[in-house]
Image (cartoon, rainbow, N blue to C red; front, side, top):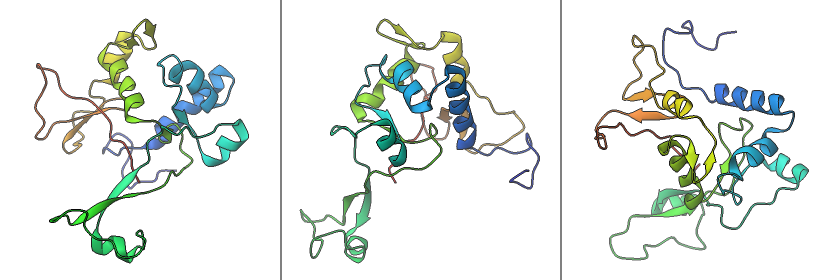
Amino acid sequence: MNWHRYAPGDEYDYSNLGISLLGHLCAVIERGEFIEVATRKVLKPLGMESSVYWLYTDAARLGISLRPDVAMPYAYMDFEDANDACVCDGECTPAAPGLEGMFVPQGRYGYPDVPAGMLQASASMIIRVGALMGCGGSVGHVQLLQPETVAMMLSNQTAPWIPIYDNKQGLVFYSPTAGIPETKGQPLWGHNVSTN
């Protein structure tokens, strides 16, 4: 079954499904559940004990509780929309002159394509993933990825004839090419973080 009107390899389309399948493959190889495998093989070695991959249903079944330092996602809303959505006790008003809106907590949510999403982590924890990639697959004395693997993940994986707008797509990571300067001759690589 093809979900698009074009054949594979003809056009670019980002898909979380590929990463979800990769996570499932890792769990099968390790003979465990993805959440347990990711915690044991990645999060704990990186010192990310307060981070967790989870879905609400899996959390209870696996005895996982949400840590208090896990970031709460927020979304910006102008005051009129915030009042219409009843996110304030009473009337939403500016905390200072000139403010036109506010950040509203979105609550913690879940969806079933782990590991393409659902890593619950604080900013101070997620930066360790960036350090891992920036340091050739190791952080401190922990070597989780081979340097060659990191190099492959941070290189363009898209066929040259397929336009992908303003990004180069690596494995999981992408490099925005429009309006972003290179740093010390190296392109910036990253991945957006969902907040809603």
